[in-house]
Image 1 (cartoon, rainbow, N blue to C red):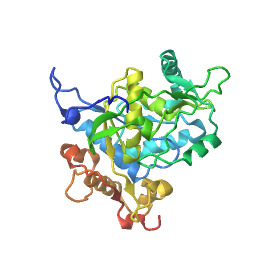
Image 2 (spheres, rainbow, N blue to C red):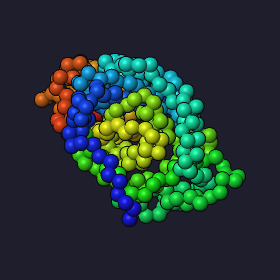
Image 3 (tube, rainbow, N blue to C red):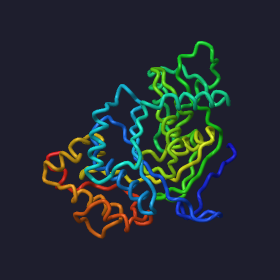
Image 4 (tube, rainbow, N blue to C red):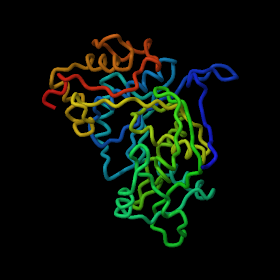
Length: 326
């Protein structure tokens, strides 16, 4: 086993004062991919990140993760911004679009290459599918096994992976509590640059969080398993590590994931079924521990009552009546 690298926050999380005095107000962010309609799970994450930033007087940013060009559409991103604004959630700075950030990602790759932290990966999609059929890790994930780690740089086909250091990383999650993960077990060496010329998710999110001064990342629990990998990449690039909060997923009333029916549980579809915006905000606020019971309200009404200690960690089913016809 490699030497464990303990990278932890103080037990009190982001609100613990540092030795030189109180910590500055946080910078939160919401970073959707413009590939479809924002569903209630996405909107709950957005509201939680907004409340977490606004409660102590911080700022909140929106970033469009459209680095995967073939799947992303600017018009869908614009619709997502309108939906957020309808709930009273607007970025305190101009929205950042990852498709405009190629130079920053290229510079990060050059730094990693200069530090011998990259290697070329020649694996095809078929190769990766075969590797995925091998036994998975403890969480059923398919970590990349480092098949190309010893490849020569001569004649490589552009895909680049980050060479993970050995050892586990730990942190205190604002929702889930203390966490300890070995990124080699959960993800393996992550892809940073794809064969089709697109920069990959892990690189873009880490570089942009650093560039925007993000101090806390709020997202769904389905992304908890990549946190240790991103911590390692932040270290390699000399970037500060934000606090993390991973929310339980919102599901349909039958327990199904919302990704398969996002449009049916987006704002427009819910409004068409008679569910008003204040009712949606109130239900989301109740689900985050800001209200004792769901009631119609506006986002600013929830700010005084937000506290991470009140946020439940488990999955959250959408009200049955809201799913009718979905």
